[in-house]
Amino acid sequence: MKLLEGKTALITGGTRGIGEAICKKFAEHGANIAFTYRSSVDKAKEVEAALEAMGVKAKGYQSDASSFEGTKELVDKVLADFEKVDTLINNAGITRDTLLLRMSEEHWDDVMVNNLKSVFNMTKHLMRHMMKNRSGSIINMSSVVGEFGNAGQANYAASKAGIIGFTKSIAKEVGSRGIRCNAIAPGFIATEMTDELDEKTRDAFLANIPLKRWGKADEVAELALFLASDLSTYVSGQSISVCGALNC
Image 1 (tube, rainbow, N blue to C red):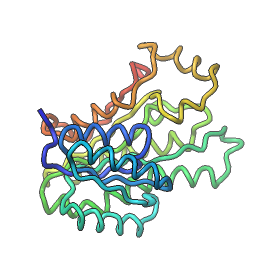
Image 2: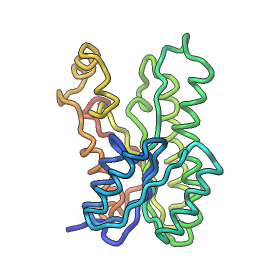
Image 3: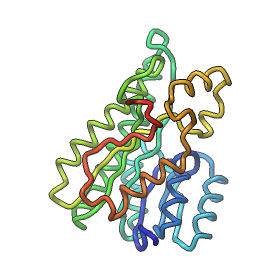
């Protein structure tokens, strides 16, 4: 059974890691996909072709979710091309990890703008459309680091904690219009980013995970699928972890 047949999803940061996994999972379940990317045109074309091969409409948009005006232009283009958006996945984000004593103002601002302001931008510009339709699912990608912090990631943790607060507030604001808003808080997920870690660091992380393995991007995508589908019509204002019991 296809859970998203006839629906359209807009996914930021859709060409790698968790974002790419969500694009493909949603396409498998019949959703048309609009996704954004920052710079890799060739990779975007590759993802676009893979999604279209699944029998859905798909299009990549080069866009910077941290730009307020750029995001407005993006949403206008997506609505012109797809006519509607049923699900918004705010997935785009960056890290600039270092201890606070070494953290520059630029490190702090970059993470806040790309991780937190981007969620505001996308949600703000798509909100009227969803309110008019009296339906919609907004899914914001947070992190378990936003729940319990992590040394060397004060900027990243603060941005992800902010996403949780934003999510709960928006759920209260627009629930009466049939719009749901939830956050997903992944733990340590095997992606291109974690592949760059040295073996000692990877082993240290793994030792703290009760399930004793890294999570898979597809496992995060499965939760996103649930939150976007009609299986979760009474789930809103929640932050749900996908972390192998790391934050218990």
